[in-house]
Length: 190
Image 1 (tube, rainbow, N blue to C red):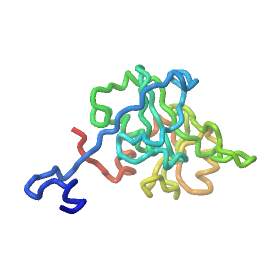
Image 2: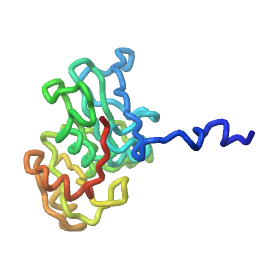
Image 3: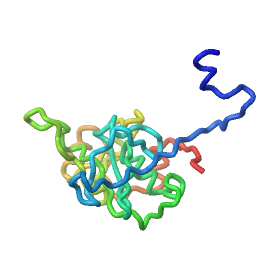
């Protein structure tokens, strides 16, 4: 018996064409020294509940939400965060929008490395007050259009002047914009 035959299902067993791994939330760790609603470092094993990617592999794009029970979900990009918020029942079964107490995105205007060559401790900004650039040449972790986030309108405008796009606020990002950026990458988590 070969190695693969010991882990592969028999050929007469049908598998769903669209197999999903539902990403579990990361529980709050009081020993972290962070408050329950403070932005947290992205765990290396955390998976995006929308696409299944590992957000720790794309820290320049990472986002997170924190629930009232202290659990957190980490996302590979602001776009995935918005997709989750648009359809929480689909991507977070049992969760409700009113359970979200904090949401953060990575500030694309802050370099990932300090002038002294060390990694920046935190680039997290409140997703609701961030400014996003839509239509730029920047490619997110999925190698497609995304929504780089900035702490200030000025930084977002400077980025848009260099890379193209328009500056939007959190409330300016609607379902049709999310659908156009997501490329209708949908699969059913139910």
